[in-house]
Image 1 (cartoon, rainbow, N blue to C red):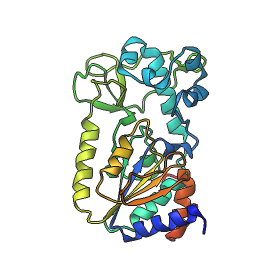
Image 2: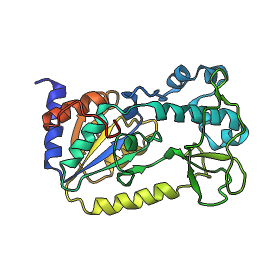
Image 3: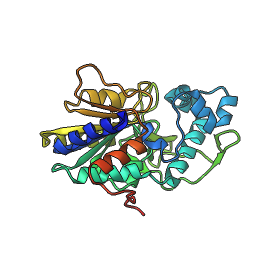
Image 4: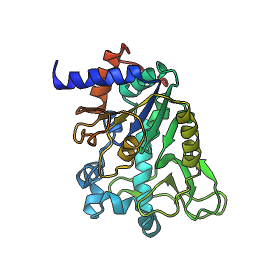
Length: 284
């Protein structure tokens, strides 16, 4: 049995012994579905060459200051990402997680830093998901005139990919007419409306109190933006860390590291625990 197989066998035993499954997911979870990897400027610029020409890297681009100074380019970037998310089919690993969660007495809850909405698209109930950084599928007022959030469903493509700029009139708040913005946490952001995430967090904490022996499956959470890794390491549960680049766990932390991409590791775990594959997402 090779190193990966041994790690997957230990992880499978942790899941079998648990009464609940916490899925902690970072950007690496989405990559196997074909979504761009924005970890580092090279990944951003491969997907958006116009941003390299403009000398823009991810952190200043996805900031509240840039939204105020250059809203057309920020909206062009986020609107194109939203279109990608709408067109993307979540990979089969999501369905493996759903199936594994269904075998646990207390079920499954997702905690993710991703703003792509892929877990709900893959069949997880919205009440089972905590989106730590919000969701691109919701909008808010940039001036925070109220706690109002509204869906981004009515937004239609209006992006010049050659310049990555929004070309139509910018979206506006239906209440006060100020600039609208995605309901996601930007860098150096004091204007994010956290109401939806706060409600999700309350539901997660209530569910967590019912769990005696949870296990965390962490997928694709890096150290550059370490929100998900910190959550996993302070969860009070063993951690199965799936990460091909940074698989290590802190010394003394119970759990197991699997140095594989998300889909490969989840497929192996599903096979170990008798989950058939491939499993079709719920929306198909």
